[in-house]
Length: 275
Image (cartoon, rainbow, N blue to C red):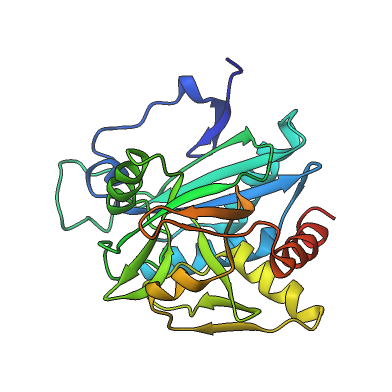
């Protein structure tokens, strides 16, 4: 197995040599946020947008971090790597407690951690399961608190699914680790951003790319039952790119990956994402 290059609190090393305290608030409370920054042909994709979102996440949790230092560390990981294509995971934690305590001390130091790994960005056809969105009420913060996602996605795995599509009180939110798009009546639809939806960078790339081609994307509140009559659907994320949904197992509903609208969207996305 190739050694993974990483950085912890400013110190660069291989990940196997990094040691984290059990009193890290990332470990005890998920009191931390993260970003996943993809790169292709050794060039980061929408780097500034990822850093801006990280800033919003740390601000929402009142965690102080030097984003210039974060940027330098991410760039150093990228420049030192032999990978052409992949992603960098970067996490910011409030810090390490002296003893476990819900109320954190103002004197603890922010903890940072990042690593780089390869990713092929190969398009994969997905089987998905519809499920209730049981996550907390601030999913627009990219928090490491992902237990609800883990439970739902591993339950879906038991049904031979690759991903989930969640709804809250019948209204579509997002997938377990992706944003959702679907085609209905030849219109590209996606759930509107809210506290229940992470503002995906890849989602934004696609919407802007389609807009530049004169293709309107309808953002709104959609009932999950509308997917029963969708002609095609797909998920977007920093590591999936744009991945078509082949089957929704709850509905026994197959979607077309040859839908002209989907093919057009993928071509436009790929030219923007990997161009």
